[in-house]
Length: 335
Image (cartoon, rainbow, N blue to C red; front, top):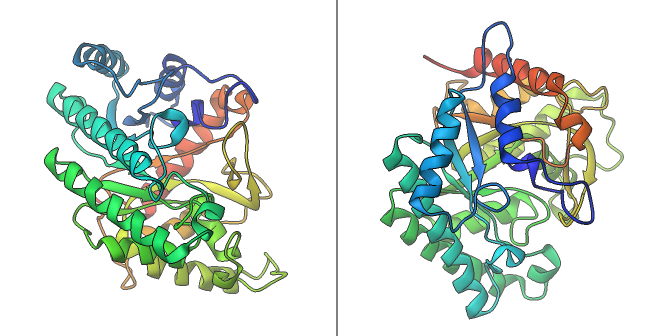
């Protein structure tokens, strides 16, 4: 549901209401196949992180009425939403953990209601690469300590956390930094990686971390062999940690909207400027080096953050993405 909020706001387009997002989800249909559920953004004006059990029961009823369920939740860990930097001051880190706890409580409540049977709590470091660069070693150490505490909280509520890899998050702005951070926490049973195809692709280009670029400078996008080799390097490093997956396309550029910093540009799956064969690249994330299913994900979702509202409100956009997800499932799913 977060594409209805991310990149929206006073300095951009207005948010799309949760009810409208749910209606668009429920209406999508490709040869009788429909979406099974939704991942929620635990933030107003969609799903307030301080929702009461009664609020969540009403939400669950609204979702169930549309024959949908709930999967993952995005915890609002950023300073503008009440959180704080994962490697900031003691107070900022405390605020970060408070938001993680609230999201875990929400997740457990939705399970108790019966609308949610699977899914993770999505987090990041809630700070920029420039903030991290002020003291890389110490800031990575602080981030690992905060995430270790977050793991303790998640385990109290039977939840798992997933760091979404985006170049806009400090200590996660390169694929090597992500692995370094996950290894420093070393709680694979509780903390993993959320791979969004559009965001993760930018790691190969070295935005914000040129030293970790995988693709060569002035890369020719028609050179598919080199592109797939770069994706293999990336997925081999991050796949062992990947527990949540977003189907998405990227045109190879960075993009930001509203208050959201520049990150991987989500573009329509059938965009002529899209750089990936989505189904083929998805297989690198969903299958191991032996070609077998990892079965690490219980569901896959799509993310269209920063799609213009006109695109989001067009039912064909939803059907196009659903059709692509069906192809991914047909190619890499299991019974």
